[in-house]
Length: 272
Image (cartoon, rainbow, N blue to C red; front, side, top):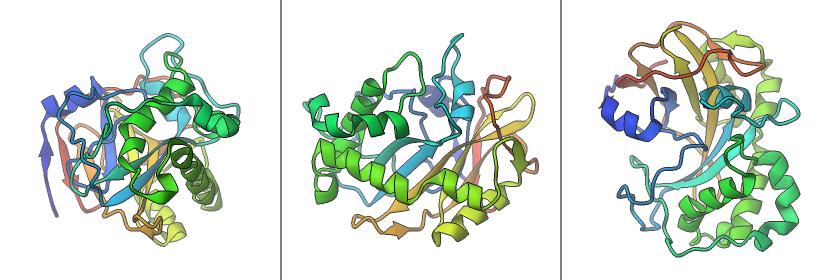
């Protein structure tokens, strides 16, 4: 079993008090929710070198309980999973990011697919418009993928992400597995079920309320090579010390009444 520790101070900087529990692909790579923007000045590389691409889809009902404001969330009209992003990633790092600081986001370039983006890739945060969200994802991640023809322009990046979402839509996978909102499941059932459906290993992320010892399904990541073939996400689990390892994971059908917070050092394990 491989164990690594991420300091609380490191996570505090990234999450500002959020506790992120991740069935994680790469040791030491935290998942940052779409509503938290890392500054461009924290030392992330501007090199475009990367190994894989990660498609991340998020469960709005859980994400909504990570916002602190009184009316924080814009829930989709149905129980759909939404896109967080498509992230070029160098193995064992959280890079690259913000590969072209001079890049300008051109809203006209995605005008023909904006309706579809609003449906499948909306901002869930009332404090951020969907256009703001898309701008952030393009500048942070899209500018790092332009060496690949299928995603070499702003329009291509968003079109390809939509295509991948449609082909590997998390809700459809979970529905077929009879993993439904409003119930709780062992983490192994979720991870193994998705892995079997894909034929490759995925990443399942959770958020946790440490005081109440409750864990909630938050995001699912699917990995691709540079030809957009499915590949294994080399799975391990991040266990915050104060969160339960044996309790089932809640797949909520509405935003949890508890605020999902807390912070602690995380142990990473290849077992689940």
